[in-house]
Image (cartoon, rainbow, N blue to C red; front, side):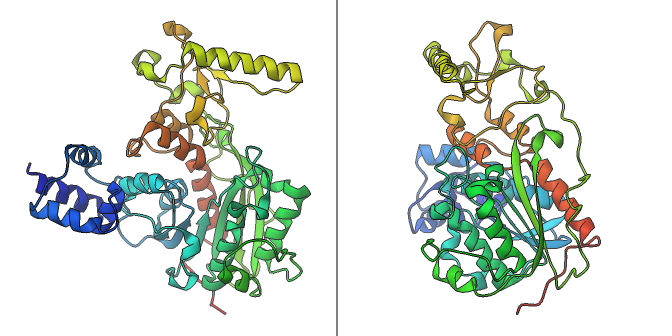
Length: 416
């Protein structure tokens, strides 16, 4: 196949414009002119660019066709785990925002759409009307792995970007996801502030020195009106062998659902099922490339740090699992560094423990086998799955939201 045809066919099969394809490949500003030149045969991509194009999937496996039962937007989208759950319930995504260039590559390879960029630079009025807002807003500001600065961490202020969009667009419902530590951050005051804002409590206390966009600050004077509930759920209770606990906040517009009560929303969620053992998602150790096996030096370092932690009386240290383990620890965004939270035993083949492969990471997060994991390097894939969501949990909540809304989320509250 001629190079010009290869470029055009790959781009068109992914459903991307020349500008989007340029961004996907990481070309500089104005790269669409380069793409156009390649397709016209005026010049050819370098061998490295050619190899990059050839590795892209022939078609985006999760490109949504048709109208869908309801419309939703996907904020802080990452690689699209939340989108997958709602798309599996026949929702149609009409807007996506994600700033990380590597996550955007994986997203485009799977959905045939390149997400819009930094949500702080996008006005709420320019976002399409939608029935449901979904967002896994940045969690580092509240997690044990971070400094727990909450709203005073720039990442923690991203909730207010969600708030300003809710105030402007007034969708029928929303789903927000974060680390379970949000529940107890600042002795519960951070979560209470979030709930007060979502529920339209005008007594919500938001310190004036919290950094946020002007639009977000102005929209705080516009009371929201959602009936909101929350729960901490673990992925291992939804069929995937990973103890990943996250807090989920779900809200419905009171003007559209005046009699709805959230008291039992999270009880007996559909799709709750005991997961199969970890071995159900693991590759045969004999077939896993040797580069996933950790070195003697790294293993010795893990063992030394475990002893040091034990002397201090805490339980930190590396963890080794095998095929019979009922589930593994939570995979984190730092997994690419040393894999310490989830190492796989390889005593059956006489090797040191190994890291998970990117495909195994996808499986323990509940992503389908067709999901493209190699649009980026393994290190970036580890970051992405560590930052992502458990797809079966999201789908379960999406299904319950449809039930709670009387079978349809395709309704919109009036903008006031």
